[in-house]
Amino acid sequence: MAESAEHNNDRDLLDERAELLARPPAHEPLPSEFLELLTFRSGKDRLAIETRYVREVLKNVDVTPLPGRNGPLVGVTNLRGEVLAVMTISPLLNAAAAEPSSHDDLGVGRWVIVLGLEHAQFGITVTEVTEVVGVPNSGILDPSRQTKISDSQLVRGVTEAARIILDGQAVLDDSRLVIDEHEN
Image (cartoon, rainbow, N blue to C red):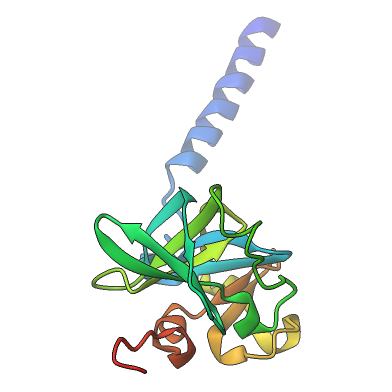
């Protein structure tokens, strides 16, 4: 008899659990409520950018330095027969990462994130690409209170995990990252 009562209690518990699991979630998150971010490091900074601005990620890229380069331009690389300008974003952010050295950052082993919407516009060199994550819009914090970056127009926000989210469109449109072929 005690065994039958114990069996009924187990059955009731399992039925209760099954009923809870069968209920639809209170609110199924919509894709528009999340940002899909590629996370990476540039020097000591932990950054992220929306994946819709990333054309591809390259590892072990040879970058040819350009003589007399200045500003964020690091050099160029060959991307399937096309010349791709490679930039460093750290100086634009006044971030902790130092300017790339001609020896350490320009050799094999670097990561380059190729950015663009319709086509590859340019690449940015980074220390490491870590992962792709989904971050709820509600988890994005105001960048003005969370970062020491002076150029906030390139920053969309900060994640709760303290990653600085770059504004992909602002990065693509930044005149400091545009190479004018007709400039003398």
